[in-house]
Image (cartoon, rainbow, N blue to C red; front, side, top):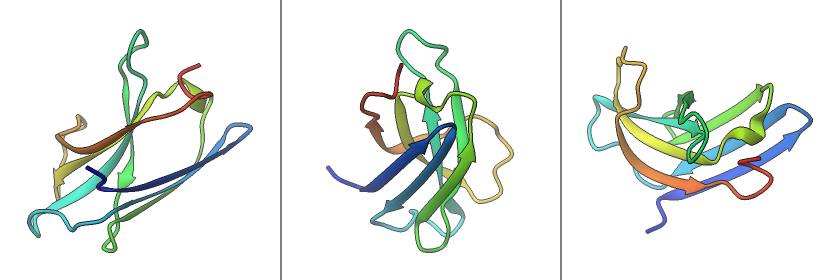
Length: 102
């Protein structure tokens, strides 16, 4: 079930990504948040890359030490004023293709 789109571009250590969700959050007290995770045999660390805007779009432009360690991108539904650093319920996820996960 396709929930949205994700476009990734990595050059050297700069990661540029645009994600869009096709539907608004379930309530006005909730927002979407994007995450990268290095799963499998890796650490399982989840890195928040920010909150989606009012158009349900997330733009990421970040320098990372090694962006290719991440294997999954996912979107969670979070409370609007969330102070918990851990991800909540996952709405959508996609496995990142090689060279990610290297």
